[in-house]
Image (cartoon, rainbow, N blue to C red; front, side, top):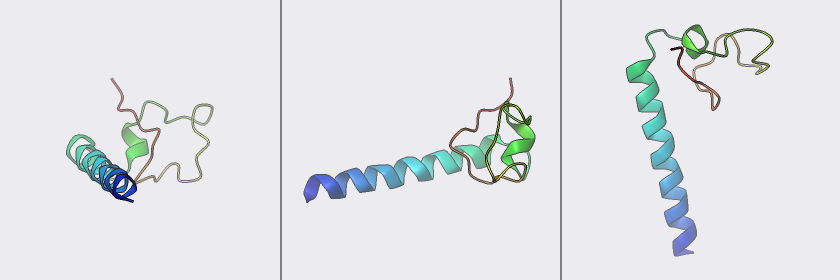
Length: 61
């Protein structure tokens, strides 16, 4: 039980940290506008082109 609770808390912390990082580093409202996968052949997610959260997001270089 204790290990499951610790794992859950770690996952929540990791998600919050990732969301904070995205808010700090993504200059637009939607992630797709600044994502290196922002074209039809690379991204098939239903949230596209207005994703606010995306596990595949990678900033353009």
